[in-house]
Length: 248
Image (cartoon, rainbow, N blue to C red; front, side, top):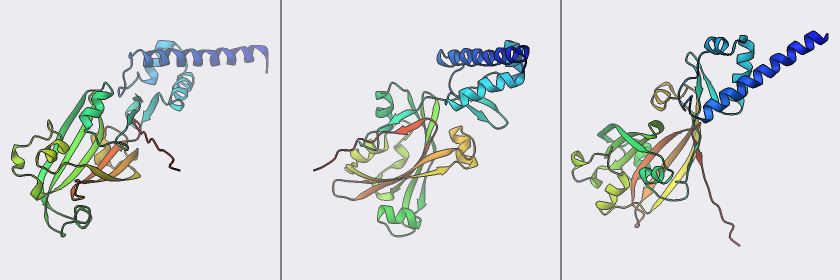
């Protein structure tokens, strides 16, 4: 290797690092906000006056550090910082938990209708198969970003007049409490799966992206099951906190 060749490569490496640091600064100061696309490679090439491989090196480094995510047919997206979810430890409403973290919660009701219980739902709610239940599907947001797709099943007897309840504004647990069926204990099971096309579209992630998959059975003080929920949490923006104590 000649000195000229070595100097050229060092200059290229230095330029790649300079671009990486400049992009990182813009990610941190909000120039490129979370869940938005950074400029295309060709635009970055023109802006920094460098080759495509140099731009790609800078981007790849930020991908590996967890700042960026490459989306097929879309471009390179800014990843969000993860939200630490504490509901594995306490029974707390979604809005209260998000607000305690300084985030703005929002809920969209995608479906609310009467159905008959499948074998899985019937088992969780201790009902007969095909017993009448309510199915409630909600998409929940934090700071306008979709966080979790939540499907809940309720025995038909828990809601006296379901048409009067707006679950985009009212907590399910608060509604059950008002009906004298407050949830005081839950059983939760965690699985991990990948997003199908429909779920990926709703949660704004790539098809095949990892999801936390929680099954929750909500019980009253008398151990009567009044809720069975299936929650699909985005794996890229959620993390779950568990505080365990050793008992002697």
